[in-house]
Image (tube, rainbow, N blue to C red; front, top):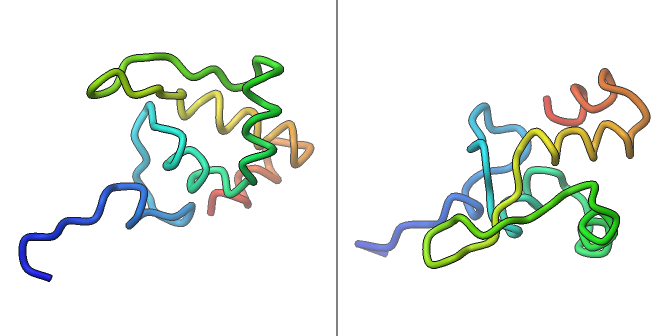
Length: 85
């Protein structure tokens, strides 16, 4: 479709080499490959914090926090590295 551009979350998956330093929830779910429920748990426990900072007040989470949450879920940094490869 001419003139239609996919959003970043639609065209990226965890195997992509570049991810922004902060991302909205939809992209964070794509990056971490976890369920909505898991992301809700991380947010409720403070493991991942979303803050207002995006365009139009979008809530963003830091990539580093998301990666640490996956590391904790998977049990080690090396397991998380495999997850993001």
